[in-house]
Image (cartoon, rainbow, N blue to C red):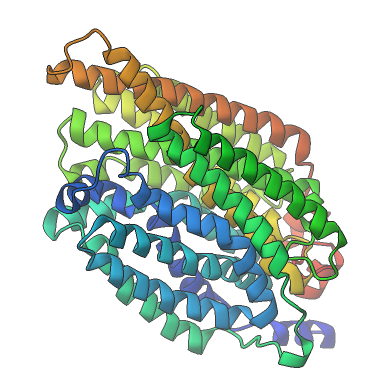
Length: 506
């Protein structure tokens, strides 16, 4: 063994796979918590007296706070150290989950979900940054991001299954209580397993507070306006004010970030066509996927009469397809083929799954209608999430990985929030229009109207996925570095860096 090779081996963290386990558990908790309450939502709605118009806030409050604050959370990790922010995020998430589990009023549950989202916004960018900086060898990086991407795409479906189990055998409150031991256990493990990366006070740069207000405020306004359109309509003055105001705030944010010395979001990160294309692909994909989860949850339980546990289990094939696609296909091909060759077909497969569901009827069989669509969607999402997550921090300087991680996480969470609100609005509006002049007292008629609304909203989701495939095709042009596929297993961190494969390359 050469001296250089020995030195390279010494720089590799021997506990990196244990660290991956801790990071993966935290990521799974973050993602599944966006949907674990979906199955429990009918029970929670009845127990707390939540109206139909406001029920979506159990989901949207989480994704809104998460997506709106991710830019700030990512930069805090860059300034104060990812291990510290990762641990604080886990402890805060556990506390917020406890508050939500003991909720006695709707506002208490909404507030707890928002608090979960806020701590998740601190936790998620640190998790992706820690993963990126821990794995620089191409093959190990592909494996690690394959697992991470599978959890990012499949965690939402796993949340539906866990929600069904907990709701049926315990009650809806355990969908929140379950986070407490997971988060606290991961925090203890993180303290011992993750490398210390504390940044001394004298070396920290100033936090861009004006940028945080503009960027986070713009995202919050847009998602709030979209959510309010469910009950107020798209032409309502409050909805229009929020949407237009949010767009203006984001425009001012971009202009401000171009001039400030220490930007919250260095624009050269998002200006990279591969990172930008990957973020757009993920954001648009999640818009369709999260809306679909909401529709299928109510379709299974309300229309088909499935129990919460059966409704959750019905999503298991989608989860399995995502895991197989991300770890068995994408992870193996990432070092061999251009990233576009994975992402674009993935989006087209997912669009095919949506197209299948547009034919959904009240009496459609699960095996003949829902199952094929889930498999197509799962296979597609695995091909989208895994390479896009890897692209998000590839080639980013270590002191900016938090901001880069926040971009892809923002796309995922804001996409989920907008998707839930937008597609729910479309479905509700179409259903209301369809019921005009019909017997709304007849349960069969009501179910037919609901399914008609789901089908139309699913058509919109299909169009969004097709648009995402076109954008990804023209924006993403990343190709694996020469020799990655042939010699990935023997490549050392220093050689990977020389090839441009290390996430620490400036």
